[in-house]
Image (cartoon, rainbow, N blue to C red; front, side):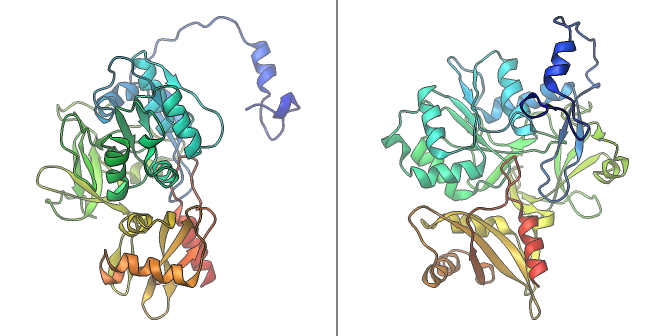
Length: 398
């Protein structure tokens, strides 16, 4: 790490300028195996402290089947890629930068925080054809410009989205307003790019996160590690061996100096993701949320994603997060934290309006009994909502 403005190093940090000055101006290539460690990437910390996942050299090649499919058979002539995803994380490094450079095509780099205005300006000015946008970013763009093609000349061919559930609202907006069917993708730092859509090669089903990308073996498991039949909710898992019986190249090597966590990640040859889903008879997966985010309220099992996506359909809502609030009588009640869209103000009348909005579209037990308006949601650096932070806040309040 570099000391600020070239000043003295502190807390064990090393000064970048001093290290650079001592370095050689020549590089001797090192021979490596596909299974040798390549990079240490820390998980986003959505549900707990980040863990260092050791990624092998083979992972770049392993990612390519999912990358190519999710980008509608990248590359095509005049392809230009851009994503606001930080290159220090799996999403930016393995889902944008490295695969684009592997194929020898340009990628647009941008400094500064994401904003919808800047996003549309970059897409138009650089004639971006392919992008990876988090659902949070897409929500901001949707609220900023509901009809973007009336204001911008876009060259988009493919949009991949991951990190949170896309939901039907964003799916419909991308198709109708941007003219591109969004390809939702599912993966983790530990096993990346394993499930998703490819609108060019198989029909996307609104609300589905897609099916296994070419080569990967994916299943839905119960708590005991047994495969579940279609229609039953369980945990998404990826097998160490691919469909040809060879080691799946996307697999991480283990958590850095944490063998216990590495062992806990597996049930036999199955790597457990901690994400819940059901599978239909055609192999499409339907996301049910993080196992850590599921909760019971008055005896009903609640997944936050469906409620959040319903709230975002309302024009007053820019973003939302749903967590349990402890309740002495019912165990928990559904609580929603809502970020308002520009031009809307918090009021008791709006609370009632949002509750009625959810009541009209979802089961009676799913509507939020309590709504709190908040300036911004706690987010990871990779664009995921940290429901854990909100959940702990509610527990502390009692």
